[in-house]
Image: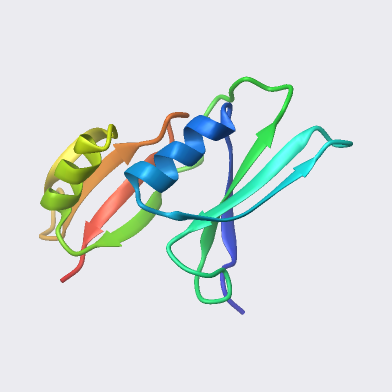
Length: 127
């Protein structure tokens, strides 16, 4: 068994795809419209779905946005240098909501960026 994907609902699919591909550098792996159900699924990731977990962006055509609630935490991505990743993501138009630095009560260097719908993406420095 392995984790296949994490699904999040997005209000504007094109805006979200631009964030995940242009700011975070993921690839659009597949996209499928479901006209009868009035939704689109788009899968993004850093490699083939057969090799690792991906993110499923679900866009319900008749819903402009969602409340994030307080149960979902964040998606985590490993980066070689969190400081450089933050600088590059800002250059690409991303919003850094927690600058790179050691985590509270620990030594691991982390940062957080926020996607257009308000979801947090944690950058964890691995090197």
